[in-house]
Amino acid sequence: MNSSFINYKLFIACLACFIFGFSGFSQRETSKWKAQLALGVNSPSQSGFVTNFEGKSLNLPTVNLGLQHMLKPQFGVKLDYGFNRITNDGSSPYFKLNYSRVNAQAVYDASRLLMFLPENMGVVGHAGPGFSFVKPLATYGSNKTSFFNATAGVEVHYGITQLLSVYFDASYIYGFSKDFDPVIDGYGSFNGNLLTATIGISISLSGCYYCD
Image (tube, rainbow, N blue to C red; front, side):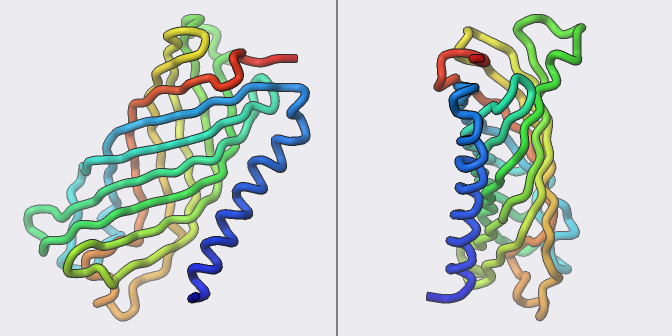
């Protein structure tokens, strides 16, 4: 088993401990759990491709899955996974890749500060560290890479019922990566930043907004 795979497993374990260990301190005080599923598009930074390779400015699909726990009425944490497909632009050599990420994020519900919002609308900010995995497909399948990232975004929610809301999320994923060396390792791959825009549903698993 190679060291990168061991580091990956260790990183995932640490993220899980951060989310569930941290939330355990206030499990009795709150019971605000949500599951989230969102679909949308992504736009990669062109600086993440090597010379002569270029990705489409808008790609499908982007899929985000998340589990969120509110520790206080306005503060919480979540663990989420994102999957993105990126393909070549018309002027670039053909390539296709999968960009996946796992992030542990802090959550801030700013709805109470925005008094002008309707009662069934809310605005939530989120940010936190994570790890990205890039897997080129087909010809360049051996040029896999991985690196740490930092994600930040804003969600706008519209409540359908007390247990269900639809939301729009715009997020930016900054990659802490090194240049490809040699350059051939970057053919059909990606090590840059990513902007995502998704629409999804948020489902309450606890049955209440916030329980004292």
